[in-house]
Length: 80
Image 1 (cartoon, rainbow, N blue to C red):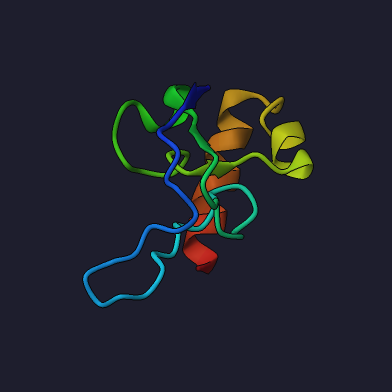
Image 2: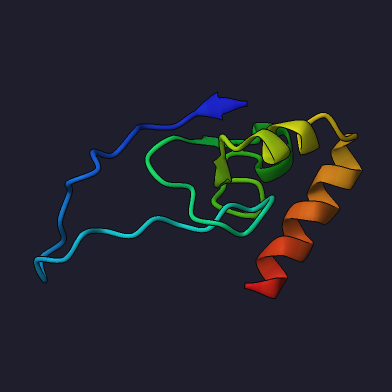
């Protein structure tokens, strides 16, 4: 797992609103400012497994075998 850059909580876009975060590929909730990527699954691309949050249930799901993680990430992205 690779930890990606953290964005500050008060970062705003050009429209003046706070910038939202991408949904987690494991649970579908926003990743917030602390997110990870599963290099084994996404292979350096922004495909399934790129955005992972640091919630306890998602950390536990990362212990699954590679094929099960890939299937989970693809299914979660498909629901969004």
